[in-house]
Amino acid sequence: MAPHPPSSAEKAALRRDALSRRDALSPEARQAGSLAVARSVLAMEALAGARLVGAFWPIRSEIDPRPIAEGLFARGQRVVLPQVTPSGLVFREWRAGEALVPGSFGLSEPHADLPALDPDALIVPLAAFDRSGQRIGYGRGYYDGAITRLAPVLTVGIAFACQEVDAVPAEPHDRPLDHVVTEDGPVPLARERA
Image 1 (cartoon, helix red, strand yellow):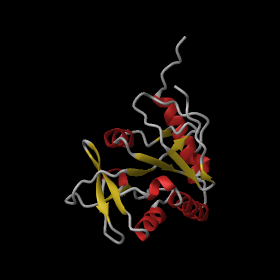
Image 2 (tube, rainbow, N blue to C red):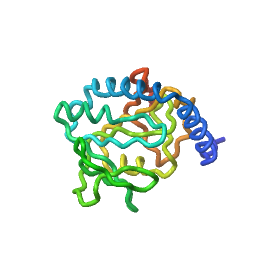
Image 3 (cartoon, rainbow, N blue to C red):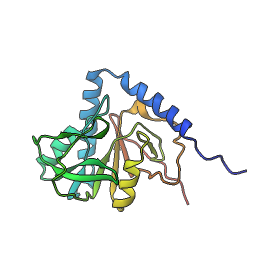
Image 4 (tube, helix red, strand yellow):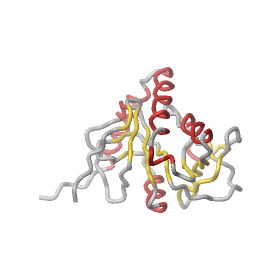
């Protein structure tokens, strides 16, 4: 008998539980964790050669990728941030200190009049992850769509260790991450053999 398809209710429950654990972290633990993640991500050889790196602006209790962006700027790499559009994520260059504008879902985004650019590496936000590299986002599929459109693109999911789940019920449109990094360092990912 074939396994039943994953339900949105299963993903919603995993998302809710993981976000609850993330929300319970103290601001000090989130700040220290964000700095630890930045050190690990910036040490990744695969990211060092990226011409344009897609990052994101944190919301709520999300891990803060801004220390990663600062490190990328310090070594001469360029950073793009996503803008949510009806057709999906569009990435536009952001430079340190530039003002952002309010976007959909409480996001801060680059100005829409900046040219769209395609990054060759993405720092990816997530609500939950597992050790196969699957992630649960916030339920709208924007990053899965961007990863598909930009392929091949290096993907690095960043999160707190408390956001790990045993197994993400992956669907056909879900795109596994190349790497996941938490405050404990790079997460060893077990890839299934085809």
